Length: 218
Ligand code: DC
Image (cartoon, rainbow, N blue to C red; front, side, top):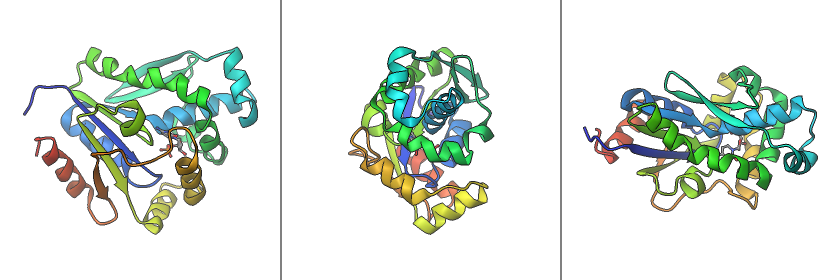
C-alpha cells in the first residue's frame, strides 16, 4: 500500500451512487469523506430558516456571510454554518430538494464554498487521514482538478429514480439534472481524464474494485 496522501474526486448526477461509492472508499482506505451536496443543502436550509428566498440570496450574502467550519464525525466531515450542523434528514426535505439547485446556481454561494472545500485537504491531513474523497458535481472540474483520480458516475434514469424512492425521497431527478447541467456556473460535466463508471451495470463491490485497481490499492 502506498504511503502517499490520496485525493479522489467523484462527480455525477443525483442517484448515480456517489455517496455509496465515497463511503466504501472512505471506510476501506481511511479517507476523509466530504459530501459537497450536503454543503449546498445546509446553506439552503440556513437560508430558508432565515426566510431568505432564492432571489435574495445574493443580496443577503453580500451583507452577512455565514461562518463555515468543519466537525469530524467518524470519517465524515460535516459542515457547520454559523454554528449549525443540520441533521441529515432535515437536509432531504421536499423544500430543500426544491430550492437547492437554485441556491447552487448563485455565484456567491459557490465562491463562499470554494475555499472551504479546498481547505478540506488540510482538514484531512490535520486529522491524520490517508487522503480525502470528495463527492459532488464540480469536484473534478473546479474544486479538485489536481485530484489523483477523478471518477464520473452515470446510471440509468429509471434506476436512479428508484434509488431515490427507496431512500424515501420525493425528488424530481430530471428537473434537478437539467438545472445542474445547464447552469452557467460550474455545471455538472465530466472532467477530462475521468474514470467513467456506469453504476447501473455493476455492484458496489465491482465499482470499488475498478477504483481501487486504478489507484493501485486493488
Ligand atoms: O448530491 P446532492 O443531491 O445532495 O446535491 C444537492 C444539490 O447541490 C444538487 O442539486 C446540485 C448541488 N451541488 C452542486 O451544485 N455542486 C456540488 N459540488 C454538489 C452539489
